[in-house]
Image (cartoon, rainbow, N blue to C red; front, side, top):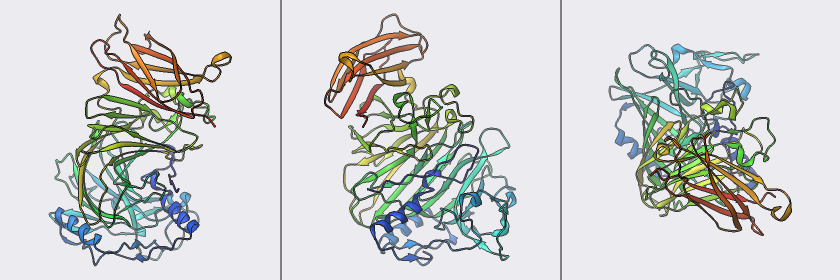
Length: 531
């Protein structure tokens, strides 16, 4: 099984777009070579199938995807320009000159900053801007970039250079300052920011074969069209053409930045074949160390993660909190419920003391909440947790998996909203889980037992009467359930023991009765034996 997860950055060290995708191309090539698989025939351009220039219509992208799906898949050719950077160190030493960015001198609320191909970004991406209904491809020369490499390679002038993605900048944290809002680079990955946030987890257009025995496929956005907004606009629309061995797709994304930045996504896929393991609205994050597995990796920081939990709002209105883990072996969890109202990977702990990292600033990483709009009627939320010993790897994936199998040549459409914010919007509906701690009990007759401590917080003042809790385990035995007031969290603490007995895995479910008339989150946890 090839589960590829990518190189990451520490905040303030580098910023080259979507870190999660950075290793994918090298990893996929290595996997193919290891299996002895033949390399797919490369296609230098899709120009015959897709025209970039001329009058632009959103419907035309759908037609392009439909027509492309009728053709055999042809992998994009890798860039071969000697001047391009070959290493991470060289890549970060090339900087786009500000005058070479688009719309920096015009009234629109947004700027476009194209990003170079090279290093791990070996497949060129064609990008066009749409002004007054006319699409015009972006072309840049080597001279559009400040070259801080030493020694500097020779570059023939003028020399057009291939692109791998782009950033959109605009006012976010202060009026009149063009802050970075979103970066789209690598496969179908993108990251966005709300006010005061630093880059953390990633979203992507689609997931195919994640954690499947056949291995994961990584579709790519091959082309983009970015519509120039009106001068007073507070949102910007862009379109993308997706291509992969299994499917093509037409995407429209509308970015609306602010205290909470929203990305509205609508897409139509045109499968080339049957897709049995499709994932909609996939999110990719990192969890290395937290209170639930403090001994998993030795680190001076008490917490190292971009997200600490998966939150789900079920079709019945039940609020679910599932703490993330860095397991010893690959774990795939499927959550019952056919049509969730929302789900997301959440960074809930917001105090610097919990992380003690002056560079990464994990307390400022965004949470992302997915609000389904259409196409999420019958399926399940899936969580994939991959073992890792380093924070450079994104090892957490969450997505919605439709129950129906996607068939060849049968279009499938879906839409949803991504909300880049501090926490799940459902948190204020009632008591919520602030932390989960797990530890061994010790010697004696309970030498094999584990103690769980789950702290709930809430907005109202503490009530005199405590709620009642119940814990169910799929294996093992639960003992010593207690609930006590916790004035430090303005809530209550639930404590219990799990004796797994002979089990290697146990699914735990904690429910708590209403407190001051408000229903607490349901707490789920997968305990696995430490091997």
